Image 1 (tube, rainbow, N blue to C red):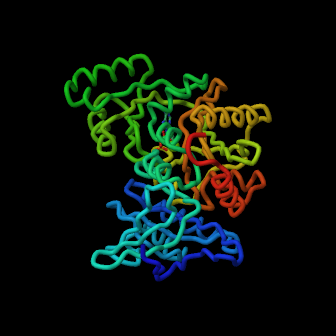
Image 2: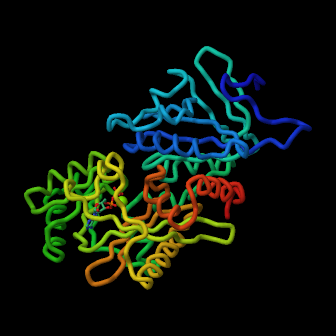
Length: 390
Ligand SMILES: Nc1ncnc2c1ncn2[C@@H]1O[C@H](COP(=O)(O)OP(=O)(O)O)[C@@H](O)[C@H]1O
Ligand SMILES: [Mg+2]
């Protein structure tokens, strides 16, 4: 292997010298529809990483899946004029790709560009996958990192996959005694082979639970592809919209109540819950949608105005959800506090929105853990964790 170093990132090993700092590869962007927000988040994460303690290697995954070396300039990774940044604008070259070895005995990351000799970028000690959605938050990237024997921030393969699939998430939570809302799944084959039958299944469900219904892609996020359907007339369009993102869809009954979220973070002695937050209904958006979440400033109330008992309840349930799905590092658990006073779990996010104004960091801020400490705790938890089965 070549001993050349990358143009921007010298190999940090210093034989016989000072102990080298752990090298963090921050991986962001990616192939999901949440590409842009991932870039914004990575900018904030890289700004927060203490460079006296860690070295940073920024790796942006383009929308078509190329692993590019990029800038770590937070200015270029910010939202400008309500537009989200893109890895293609940040990549140092239009062609080169970073290769992570799948050999667990080799932590040496390589940079390859067509027509030139591959360059060694040095070893990576821990990966921080700042990725949302498919091919990042869903266990696929985690599988690659498991193969390579590289520690990484956040949940492993199983928890990531469960957290990405709204059907299996509900099945897991139900089996662990957590309360979920009524739903029905329409599988790709059901819709493809007999639409009338699938529609009938939904109409029966609506007969039991009433309209409106929420039609969702089973594996998406950031409210993308979700439609609140008022009546049968809107159903096909909503299904088609959801299927642009995932052939498997979920149809859910409307849950009336307050939206309450709670953060869970892995400390040295185990997971702990943050103070919860409340997401008030957003008036000029049909529900808490992409614009409301990311473009408009986050309007969540921290801490949520709950009774001490309700706060304790939701914190306990959030940790239960973390354990039920076998999460690691962090999770944001989202609940509805229904009008009859019950907490119903809506979903978990194994890599929740993580800009400094996002709910997860804000909840921890209010609980005494600032953004930089949060990033550091996540890296430390990842470095502490054994690789392999655990
Ligand atoms: N069953 C439901 N009843 C009422 N509101 C819902 C329901 N499902 C989703 N919503 C609203 O839509 C938002 C996005 O849905 P969610 O299931 O959290 O998907 P995503 O993974 O895209 O965040 C929620 O935060 C909530 O405001
Ligand atoms: Mg959500």
